[in-house]
Length: 116
Length: 111
Image (cartoon, rainbow over all chains, first blue to last red; front, side):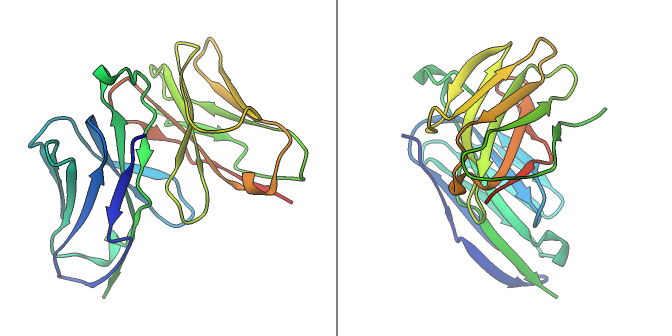
């Protein structure tokens, strides 16, 4: 059974600071996703990481993937209040494992509050 | 280019009733997945359909069923509702092995 663990689950930080959210998963996967969710809203896609060593950046957010360590990170640079949200990582089973479905397994989410 | 749409947005039912939720994917996207998100948790995978066939099923009881239509829209049915079925139900659509785009969700409350 594929398991996804995020940490921390809750993070309060000040504007201008840097921080990293970690996502560990238990079995082989070839796709890792990061989503953002605002209170009462749906999920917004941030990044899709497809290969070992993949790094993607959008604004103050940068995501990376290490498939050997089964670890992805979401790094926040010089945080601003607008980045306050819950961030989820999600993993899809490896194609060759027979998991042909794209059903995603999500972590519990990291609730991020950025104080002015 | 319209995104994923879902209906209704909110629904209130009582225990034992049945509910049908609907999802329309982005034009050109043939894969639709359903997720249940309980307050404070990450979404849990329920079903995936691709080209009208079930491609995957999560760990949910048989009270949950779904289907996909020729136009790739989808319905999720839940029978014999329980209080614990209260959640946000999300539909996601996309091309296989690509980003899954989520709809706005249907918020179900079971009393």
